[in-house]
Length: 297
Image (cartoon, rainbow, N blue to C red; front, side):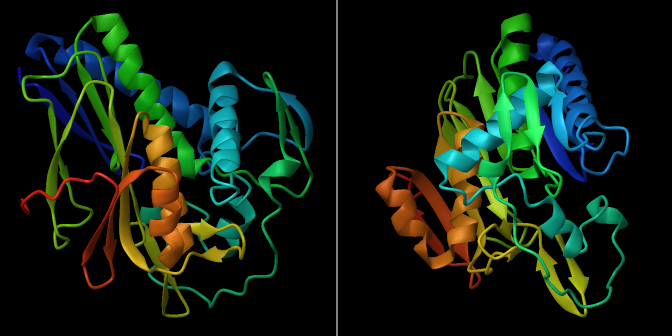
């Protein structure tokens, strides 16, 4: 048995890697089971998910959805509202109302008619959620990263080996590292510049992109990262933003905020002491902080 397993998940790809080949099957089982639990809790595209069945007012959440909702609200606060879970209605208006591979090749032009309600209108008290009537939640900006963090640590604790979990470019590690550390190739698309980095024990990295999850309306290409300040897709200054941090949630929150901020991203990231790698529309690489100047892979 090898030390890694790749699989399809949530219209993207996933990977599980371990430090001990004999443990791979057990770790993959834990991770896949956990991903199913996350999907049942917060999928926007499953009518039977807990998130889809929420009604306005006060609701008691399952432990998993309470965790994911708390993560989303914490990310909104940490980013100053640049990452906001109340963009669900905006995404629907933009045409992202089903799994990305099911969207039509094109559709009518988009007309943005509403603003994002704002995360401060949503209140979580332990496992009790207060949801306003006009708020549609979307946890896509943070749930994938939280799943990577949660399941890497769960698998490492249960099986007792080093674990790396990647879900669509969001990477978390837990437990011991292999000799030389975890070797990670950072590249959003096959025609983007690539860089290989080494992750030490417990480190995480996340990439947000304006070129991967896209669709067309009125002949115009639209991507999935909504600027909560405008309810429109963020200006595509960057093809991708990759951030390294102690947790995947922290990394993903910062990488998403960088996409939203556009040209102001480098200063915002630097002010927070973050390490990042941005790729602009001309595929030029901009490094922030201590991102290594490694040779292209």
